[in-house]
Length: 239
Image (cartoon, rainbow, N blue to C red; front, top):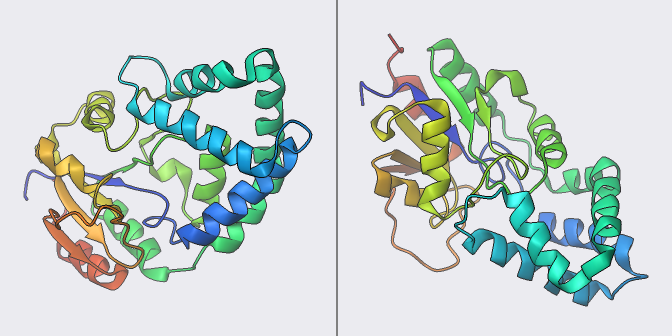
């Protein structure tokens, strides 16, 4: 592991300890409330998940924002600008209510500070399904400094989603790192640990583990936030 100089972090459930079930409930309740004059909340949630699935599966080199909006436009047609406007309004205001799903965890803050002190480059490799505005807010909720990270994936800038390997390849290209130089830290067995297929070392945080497909544990390392802090404490300084 002496080649490693860069740590990639997932956000939700990793850098941002969060109750994902509560997160989704608060998120869809708040967002769908802005569209009740256009469709029922149930119809709206189905629409969003459908467009999201299309975006995740799209391997064309267009931004995730473009892929999502193209999928959405097939249903909402000329109303797309109105939808985009309401999305922005939501993220600027009511999205803050989702913060109630956050669970404070001191160990992840200490781990980030230790990695900075040891000279590691830090990356937020969140699944880029949310606009930069929403990602920046979640980074703030996590109590970490955006400026400590050399790269943050986003809806507007990235061209692929997890669990596509192209998502990780794009980040490696953008930050000019090889897989052997990186550790991916996440809590989703499908979306985060898949990075190991490229040769990236993986660490699975188990406190908020997601494994909806009951996949076998393919991580190189795994443990709680406390275990991860101990792991970080044992990492060497970067030369």
